[in-house]
Image (cartoon, rainbow, N blue to C red; front, side, top):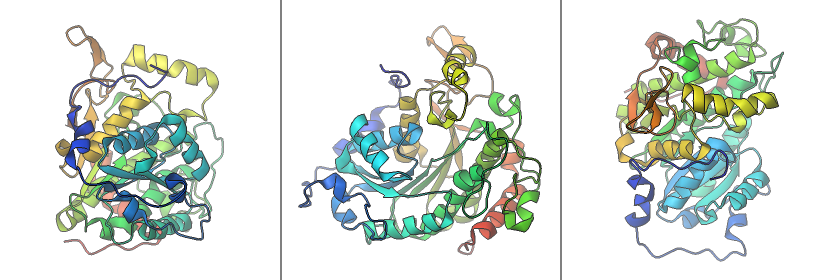
Length: 396
């Protein structure tokens, strides 16, 4: 297979095509010259319409960052299933259209809406456009996947709202998105919110505990200064691009835990996080030097055993979105040992096991002491709400 698009193990694959057999309803048609183009916002001042007609009875799923890597592969899997209609929330609409054509994504089962996660105004506009698009249909799935990683930056970049860019895109934009869609999603049957986590935010893993700088949100001192604006790091210390990414993933995983604790029982929404494996060829590493991008996949595949292809990572995330096995809320899902140690070659299985890489079965993983700290998580949740200026329903 082409580089980075390896085969997925045969285990637990029945759910991938189960949706195709789930419904045999007559197809709905819309009289337009190009159905795909009709579902793309060209003038962002005009919300798209007729999305409910186009989606039919399929489950509606939003995926952020769907134009590359993990998001693209997940969108492809779900669109091919037959029972999901995927709304690709991306910065560049034209790029997503081209990606869909190049990658053979089933365009009958996707729509493209613009979303710039570094802008809180864009997040709010996206939600308005989404609601206009789907009309009275509730959203069934929200997948918060998009992320930026800026390890080479000597100085912080700031969003238009004044927040450090990694935290703005990876955490705060998604945090507001979850807030704005919570009430809508509770009206769906079996709704799920999924936020992609990372071992880099968990110090109880090889990648999170042995690779410096480690994630450390401290007591969120940075967010208490100047309402968090133009403050380089959440802990109030000097800027480190790699650490900013890791801190944002800590906040992602804490968000899932807090949403589960506060709202699972009252809304019925399943809140999940996951580590899909080390996607060493992902565009997430585009800021790294070329020698690193060439050698890192080989190192992860043959030394640590943590490597997973983009295609397999997409199937993993799609499993958390769609599989009945993943209907339990408040879980951090992993595969193949969860990367808590360097992998060991298993002669019987013919693969490296224990490092979170390719293969293995899905399981409920544990998180680090910091990520699991309820007091810290509550503080993160309340401070994040203040930073993005949102309010939440009362806890049950």
